[in-house]
Image (cartoon, rainbow, N blue to C red; front, top):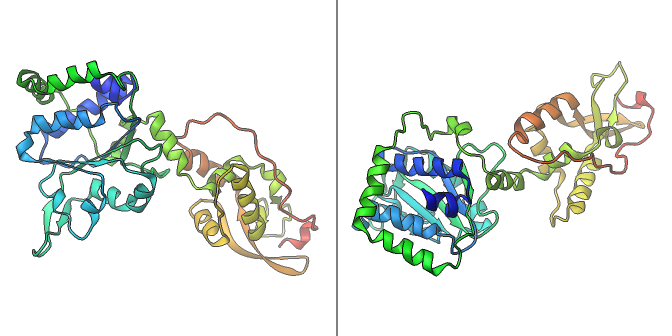
Length: 347
C-alpha cells in the first residue's frame, strides 16, 4: 500500500486505496471485466513496471496472465493472440499519437464483453473479454480523455524514489520473498469489496485526480473553450427584434465565428486551425445552438449561427466542463463579430 501511495499515486491516499481495491478485485474476480482503464503517467524510474512485476508474480509468471507491449499493433493489428487468456494488458510508453490513433479501440477493449481473437492460420473466434488495460507512459497526455469519459482513471506517479537504487533493490528483494508475496495475495483476497463497483455507471466513485482532469481538459475542443471564455455581448449580436423567431437569442455569421475561434486558438499559442465544417459539427453537439441558419442581412443572405445563451452556458457548465477544476477567468474580448446593422435587417 505504501508503494501505491508514494510511488504510483504521489501521496494521494484516496487514489492509492482505490487502486489497491481494483487490484484486489482483479484477484477476487478473475472471471469478470472491471470495465475501467488505468493510466499511470510520470517520469521513468517511479516504479510503474515494478507494480506490474509484483502482480505478475502473484498470478504466477508461468501462467502468462499479463501481456506487456510498447507496440499497439500487437493488440490491434492483423493478429492479436497476445490478448488471448489475459487478465491484464500493460501498454508501455504510449505516446499522444498512439493514444489518438487507437483511442476508440482502447475504449472498446475496456467495455466489450468478447474479444475476437485472430491467430495465424486459424479462423477468427470469440473469447470472453477479461482484460484490464493499464497504460504506462512518461508522456504528459498519453491517451485521449474526452470530456464525457466514463472509463479511464489517471494517476500521476511520485518522484520520491526516482534514482534511489537502495530503495528499489530492497523492493526487488521483496518481490522475490514468497512469504511477502503470499501475505499480499491474502490481503487482496481478504479485502471487503462489497461496496465497490468498477462499472462505468459508477464513475463518480472513482477518483478524479488532478492528472485526470488536466488530461480531460487538454482534449476539450477549442470551440467549447472559446464559448466558455468569450464575452458574448462584445462578440455576438443580441436580437431584440420581437417579430423574429430568433428573438432573445444571439446571432453571428458562421464565417465570422470561425475566424474569431481561429484568432482565439492563435492567441492560446496552438498550432492548428478549425474550418467551418468541423466547427458546425461540434456546435451541433451543444444544446441551444442552431447552425446553418440563413438570415437576410443588408439585403444579402448569410449563413449564421443562432445561440440560446442560457441553454449553451448551462450545457457548458453542467456537461462539458463539469469535471474541470479551473480558476474563474475573465471573459476574453475580441473585435466585434457583427456589423452595426439595424435590427430589422436580422430576421
